[in-house]
Amino acid sequence: MSQARLMDGSALARRIVEDTAKKAADLKERTGTAPCLATVLVGADPASVTYVRMKQNRSRKAGIESRHVELPATTTTAELVATLDALSADPTVHGILLQHPMGEHIDERAAFEAIAAEKDVDGVTFASFATMSFGLPGFVSCTPGGIIRLLDEYDVDPSGKRAVVVGRSAILGKPAGMLLLARDATVTYCHSRTQDLSAAVREADIVVAAVGRPRLIRGEDIKPGAVVIDAGYNAGNVGDVDFESAAERASLITPVPGGVGPMTIATLLEQTVTAAARQLGV
Image (cartoon, rainbow, N blue to C red; front, side, top):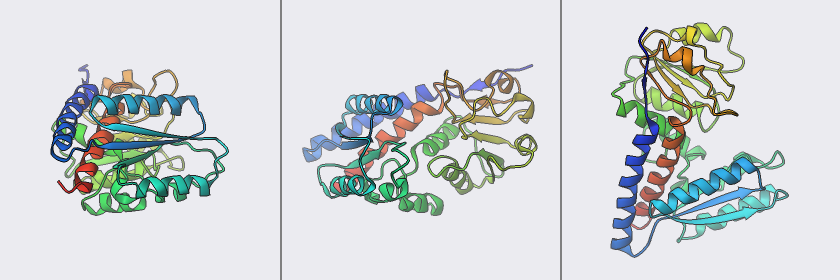
């Protein structure tokens, strides 16, 4: 039985970041200003601290200045919104990343909506979702945007294909489906209430697993020759797809780690430089 070809997100992300670094250097040379990404963290969740530090390091390597705002876990929604309002109004900040989760006491949607649309380089606001859905200029949610770039890199044209997105989160599942729809795929959303998930997955030419449940998607349910995008990340470097069995049936598959994850950060950095260029008028 043939083995699926790996979709190497790490290699593609490196190329995107290298190109982004050149654009950042060119922007600084032309305007005297380096792109600046502000990261906002509420509390000290260990995973979030690690993610933010990694994004800061990658930013620096790409010639993007990083400004970090760390708020206590007791921060209220109003206090967080005030912080984001101030960053949105600050002309020296070009992109804003609000790390989540932020604590159950915070109104996450109200916080996201405090980010100015032109600085929403993580693609989390209503405005960004609307521009994604209508194919208008704006910023895509980073993980779904990275997924589309991976499909393009491996010459996967979604047009006319059946795509099944397992997961309906506001920043992953829903926008991933909208971006696939914009590429003329026939999109089915599946979730925790879906009856007979296996039957839906078996029909899919493209499977996007984004539900946060380890090895939920089994190889036996993968249509032979399907493209499998595993956007899940669970403890122990395990995705939402049972990789070994799925790789025996898929034509292309993303590994975990090294598939979707690096593309998310690369998209964030690329969109930060784009945002800076727009705000600086070049």
